[in-house]
Length: 373
Image (cartoon, rainbow, N blue to C red; front, top):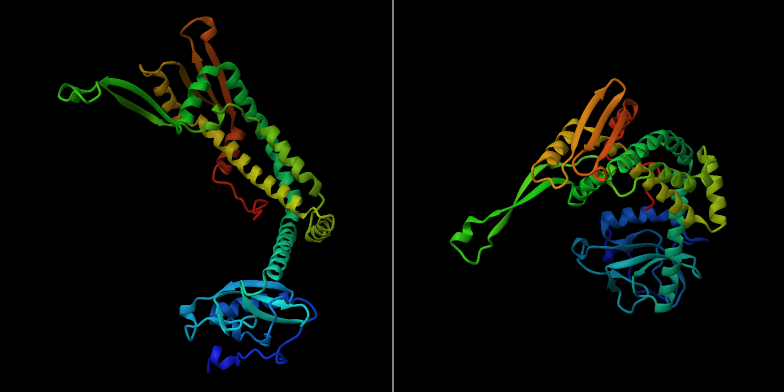
């Protein structure tokens, strides 16, 4: 016969109760079994070893797990009994707790204990959960720091090349770069707008006399190269400084020693934030560096050329693309106007950088150091 609230225990909550298991310290090893039990039965009160005597609302306890049950899925469609309350059927949201003085486990409603006792228990659980999260994070990530630093070191030559391309563009053709930046701020669309007569205005005085007509030339790719500022090498160095304090953790044993050292110094949160932040920044930088190279794509340059040469373009310029044995050159030039308005920039993408970008152009793998939780 399946255990229910009626068959498992007579919930009379006597002052003296001995049919329960006892533990010297909080039995966290039971939490996973309890979770499975609640999920499968929706009757937390039938979990083995619970204390079902009367509990005082001011008895200090430690929270092992917080849970909720669905009344519709309970065998009798009732509420869960609580040994702290006058009425045996009391709650659907509750806590598995370890009662210090009795050295036992019990389930109580989430708001059945006194306010002060509940506040102390919840505060301790919050601190314990944070500590466990920090320990688990450090144990799973610290041994990945050395390989991440080696990956970062390999990115520096690529970053130097891309920084050089950006600076060449900024110095040689700042107005052209700014025009493309304005397009990027508008969603990356290469668009020109013309005001034309509104034919409907001939028949309706309320209609506007002019309407906007848009000409679309595609979407700008590799938009990072037209930002206000690009400094990939500097950003990589910043990430490196975040990771260097943990560079000696080559294996899980060293990671354990480092975790103990960090937690004893009370620096768990700081370490988690450093490593998590570094992982996110590195993944984003690697992705953006790869995206930069798509600026040199043939169809992207062709879209820019059509946009730049159109009669509605207020800042007309020319752009050409040349494929060479060692890479791709893109030349921007603007010869109209006075000498101060003339611009010329030759951007060169080496084959080795293009090949690297092709391998790393997808969304970054955030597994290594990113999951800061």
